[in-house]
Length: 277
Image 1: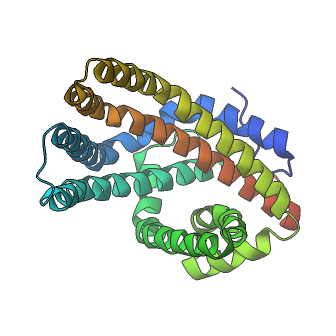
Image 2 (image 1 turned 30 degrees about the horizontal axis):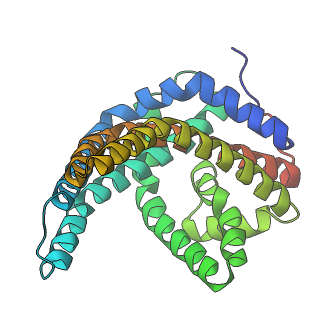
C-alpha cells in the first residue's frame, strides 16, 4: 500500500482522507505495538471500574437508609477512582504510542515495533501525563470564564504533544510553539477538529446505541411491572460492557491522535516548508 505523505500542506478534506487511510492500514499495527505494556493497566482499570459500576447499580436496587445514603453513594463513587487511575495511565501510554508510531511512520521506518516506540514512551510519559493535566485545567478554566477561551486553547494545544514527541522538544518550548505554529490557521484547525470530533462521537454513539436500547426496554418493562429493582439489576449486568466501550475509546484515540499529527505536519509545512525528506 502506498505510504501516506503527511509532510505537505493540505486542506480539511485531504487531512481527513489521510487520517482515514492511515487508521485503516495501521490500526492493528498500533495495537500490536502497544498491547504488551498497555494490557496490565488497562485490564486492571477496566475490571475495577466495571466492578464498581456493577456494585453501584446493585446498591441502587436495594432500599437505602436515607441517613446513610450520602455516605454509601460517596463510598461507591470513590471505589471507581483506582480504576480511573489505571485506565488514565493506559490512555496516556497509548496516546504516546500513537504519536510515536506516526512519527516513525512519517520518517520512513518500515517495521515499527515496541522497541521503536519505547524510547518515546520512557522519555515523554511524565511530560504528557502532567502536561495533559495542566492543559486540561487551563482549557477548563477558559471554558468556565467564557467558553470561547476554552475552545481557543483547546485548538491551540491540540498539537502540543505532537511537537513534544516529533521534535523532541521540552514541554516549555512545545507549549510556546503551540501558539506560534497555529497563527493564521486557527479557524482551519478548529474546523478540522470539529468535524473529526463529530465523527468520533458518531462512532461512540453507534457502539453504545444497543446499550441505550436495552436500558430503555428494561426500564419500560420494569416500570410497567412495578419492579424497579429489576431495572437496576439489568443495568448492573451491562456495566460489564465497560471494557468494550473502552476498546472503542482506544480506537477513537487513534483517530484523534492521527488528526492532531496530520494537522501538526500541515502547519509545519505551511510555516517552514520542510516537505518530504
